[in-house]
Image 1 (cartoon, rainbow, N blue to C red):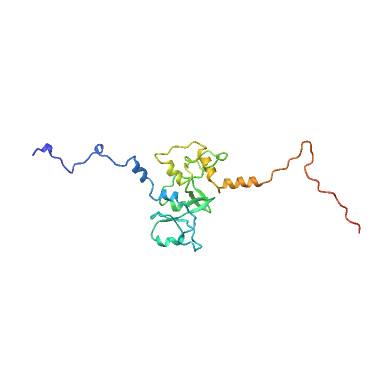
Image 2 (cartoon, one colour):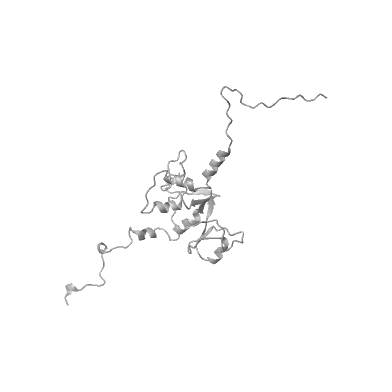
Length: 225
């Protein structure tokens, strides 16, 4: 038997000959985030539970990270004992989650946090603005919403998922805003515009008229007693 033809089955494979599967490819993209995150971002909350609609506690504002089978009401949690569940809340018609709940399960660094009802929260999905406010120096990388602090890059959890994707292409400012304006029917900005349209305009006086107030009327003398 020729020694030079013998191949040791226990020999070490050096890194230059080793092919690591999934590095930089679709597998790494999928493994970057937990499997429950994208279904969570697409879920609709605050609807009436189809199983416990008779109860006053039938509002679906809970979510099971282990089952990922849709939003749940508080009565549904009896079937999800020992599971990881989170509670979704609302602020200005948008879904939020408290930081102390979500940070245990996913990395929320670089996402703008807000204080609502004395608790820090992050928004689940993007909330584009028609135009950032005056003095805003930092905006969301994905939807261009104005951010309060300069060291944040995203306004929501959904924007971070989209902005860190390999296929992410930065939008041109103004494209997403028009879509938001056409689809948003209950946002705060619409409430403000409706309020402004309901305020009556100041009456105009003809040129050369110095009268600023209407005549109170013809005075009448009180009857003599």
